Image (cartoon, rainbow, N blue to C red; front, side, top):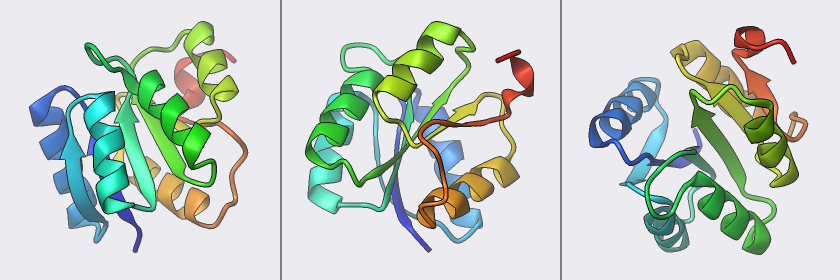
Length: 135
């Protein structure tokens, strides 16, 4: 199973999300609470996949995504958000996010995404739970 880190400014969300992953035999090797910490944690632990919230104070998910993709284009980054705007979707696609999961999500969506991107079987910005929007 892949090694992952979880980045979210909400401590409880990061904890619960990590617990869900661990219950499904995903090796959560670390958690960070903003984009800057997420980059430092990635550099230290070198996980296979980074899960990141988008909207965080100071250093947001776009900061993390753009910086990590610039230096590690092969890294799989899954962005998680409740923001259903076309503008956010377009920005994520341009920044080369590997997947976008909309809140609220189901754990099976997360597992399918992990399986798909681990096999390099994804287009840039695979939208999960896209029934919420009309794109």
